Image: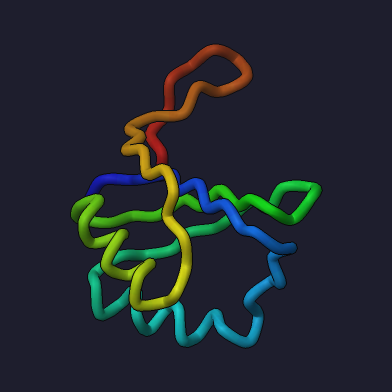
Length: 90
């Protein structure tokens, strides 16, 4: 299944969704997407999330249902490692 990086922009500081994680994951399961992990910017106004999903449309549907922004979605297929080697995303 393809991997995607999602950039999310927030008008206010992001509150880490510890209490909402179960609900988000339930929605994701229903849309056949898997949230792998996220990075949060220092100013807490952006997050960058790695997802596994069948399509951009599935990610957008899950984001809408969860009430989350999905400003930029980019499909990725490899990681460049510090030694210069190209590795799989998984």
